[in-house]
Length: 97
Length: 148
Image 1 (cartoon, rainbow over the protein chains, first blue to last red):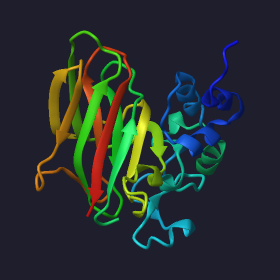
Image 2 (tube, chains in turn brown, yellow):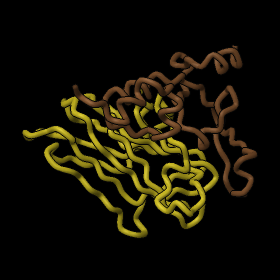
Image 3 (cartoon, rainbow over the protein chains, first blue to last red):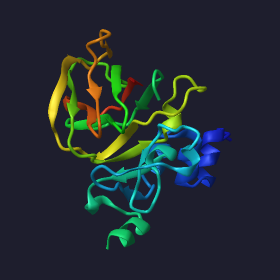
C-alpha cells in the first residue's frame, strides 16, 4: 500500500485558503495548483485607493490596496482581478451592485 | 520599505504565449527591479521563447502574493509593492521595457546593472510575460526587486 505524503494528506483536509495561508502561491503537486485556483476572485478597487491597515501600523510607510470586500492585498494570499466579469467573491459582488 | 530586497516566485505559466508569469504593482514607494530568472521545467528539445517586461495597464486575474512571503530577509519589513502570479486572465499590454529571446531548454537569468534598473512608481505595473512560445510546460520564474 502506498503511503500518502504529508502534502497529499493535507490536500484531503485543507480548504483552499488554509493551503495558501500555509504555502502561499507555491505548489508542488498539480492538485495544489488546482486548489489555489478554487479561491474566490476578489475585485480590487480601481484607481488610486491605498489604505493603512491596522495590523500594519508598526510599519508607518506601509500602505496597501484593498478589495471591494475590505481585504488588504498585501496581508493575505488571495485571487484578485480588476475585471468585474471574473469576480466570484459574493461580498465583492454585493458591494458593487 | 527602503533598502530591503524581495523576490516573487511563480511556477504556473503552463500555457502557450501570451502568458503573464509574474507582475508587480507599485504603491507609494519606488520599486527597483533588480532582475529575473525564468526556465522551463520540462523541455528537452529546442524551441523559441520570448519574454518581455511590460508596463501593463490593467491587473488581469491572478493570485496576489502575501507581501511577507516575498521577503528575502525575514527580519525586514514587508514590501509595499504587490506581487501577483498564477494568471488566468491577461493584463492589458502597455509600454515594454525589456525584450529577450532564448531557447526554452535552459534557464534565462537577467541581472540589471546598478543604475540601469527599471523602476515602478506611483501605481504603475510591470509584468514578466511570455510573448512567444507554444509549449504548455510549467515555467519557473523569480522576479527580484528592492524598494527605495
